[in-house]
Length: 338
Image: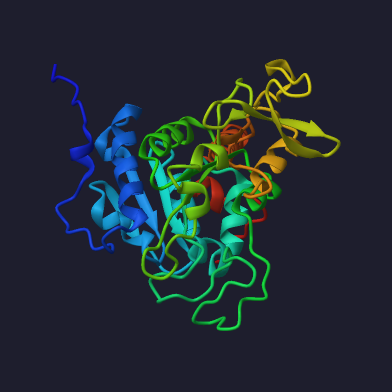
């Protein structure tokens, strides 16, 4: 019997030259993916990476797996077909904030609503990078870009809010420069049964540099990010002395040891709660009012579309009187023409 192949990150790197801009956050996310895949115990030939159009969508060329570079906004439709037709494959959709939520917006929400068992990585740099700096559906209100020289007057989408609003079963958020966290999140996403959406906050060094500088500065990031862990109190800060509590309908930052606040007063993170109320509060948090939530935010069990398709076909076949073409041709009202 042949020994089982042990895969490494190197096995998932193709021989193609990576042509993202030097310093692009895409490279760090790519590194996280190649570190995560060997940990999943899935055969090399059972991976498929599907992308649309955009800087992130070059991914299938650089990852050494089966893949398909689709057209703008249609990655979700292609990935859905791949998974439903080949349920045993581990399917990954690579997309950006423009590709997924502008031209591909309808496919995005319906993929999530159906809960097809695939993994979607959303590279969110709050700009159109490949087409040279137009504002995107996640660009901040008032942001000056090539297509909004006086500041955009559109309110941005929040990917987490949109995912949960589309009845999403899994949502996580990470940031490009935290390779360890991104790998851990991707592993959890792959283990989840259903559509897993991972928003990767990604810096575009050319057209939207320092988009996330407020929460990535080494001196202050621990006070401006909160990394969530299921079953653990929502504590953060350089000294782990800050936490989140629920005050009325809103989350509030408190300091441990002040005003009688103890660790038992801090909210405990529950990714598996079917009620999305707290999950929505977490994805809406933003600096400077609140820290930005990272890690797995929601992971609940829901019926999986591709499994339901297979079961429905099997049920229909088991009850059907039609077993072959002759049965079909001779069913119903038939006539003999002489």
